[in-house]
Length: 67
Image (cartoon, rainbow, N blue to C red; front, top):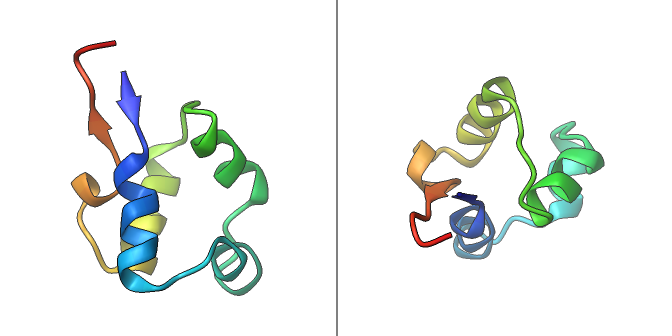
């Protein structure tokens, strides 16, 4: 199962809010909602988040084999 826990940890480390992503960077509120619920997002969105946060993919998602 894909987990977005690293994404929320990265936001905290970089002191970036969900508000900033939505209203300043143009990330859809629905995307943030989907990530909170553990639902899929597109690789295009993943790429955009990596660019905005200046991070690697593993700083946003991880594969949890236990679920």
